[in-house]
Length: 205
Image 1 (spheres, rainbow, N blue to C red):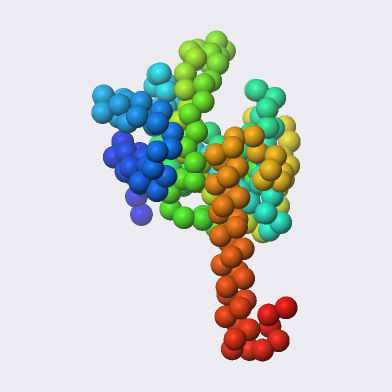
Image 2 (cartoon, rainbow, N blue to C red):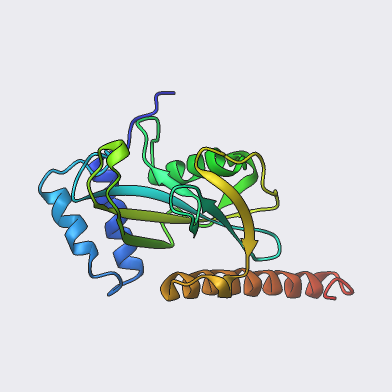
């Protein structure tokens, strides 16, 4: 099977589906669409004024969310990073970055939907050591579930990893969307349990 790299059409289609699911959110995404219209290669980390990245919102069995401590910034962030030519979708790129940074392989994570739960636009400071000017990241963040724990960290970029409660997430839009998704999971599980109780009395506890 040949893996094809992520294309501008794939990014555009992902943006279109996202904006249809979350109408009125992130009006700044107009600028990203404009860059695509101009023919900018958003898959390349050298593209300015910004380019696409992929992130993983990983939820454990206790509904806490995985965070990593980034070496370069000293900040607690969601796992994620730049796209690579071997990536065939933004979702796959998010899973790859999660594995590279935390040691949690794709085989033990389950995507919750096909599209991103959140797209975050944020500024990145210039990095003279890498000859990178100040720019923006357009971070496509996908929701995953797992029962696995943290594995071997990518120590060059990650100094620590922890599971945090949803209410500790500082971005209000992201916090609400995760909480809503988890509530949906809970409602679905309760409905399933109620259905089982109808057929097999005694299983509803």
